[in-house]
Image (cartoon, rainbow, N blue to C red; front, side):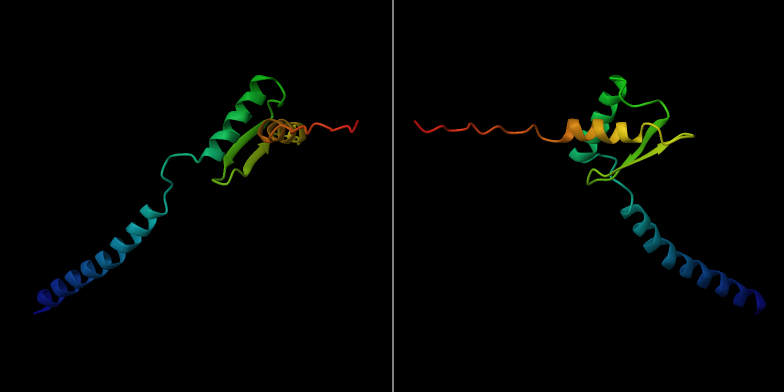
Amino acid sequence: MGSKASLWRKAHLMKLLCAIAVPLGSLLLGACPTGRNTPLQDLVWSTYKQCKVEGRIPSNIQLDRVEPDGRAWYSANRTAYGAQELERCINEKVSPPPTYVPVLTGR
């Protein structure tokens, strides 16, 4: 009779574990990124690479990640030197060019 109770407990424990594992697994898989960048992420990564190629960002500055809304996270190795250059270069490249309105003169 002891073995029947032991088997019942094991079966009950397995059912309980499955009842917890399946929803938890679904939740974790649903929270994973799709693996595709948003257009804003692509824009920021592209401008970062352009600024690096142009030599406008020192080698101690590394772009770590870009949020889907375009917010960038970067790190500086040993010193913050270059952080302003990174922000300036990316902002220059991402900002729309100014629009010029012709000035009308009355005659």
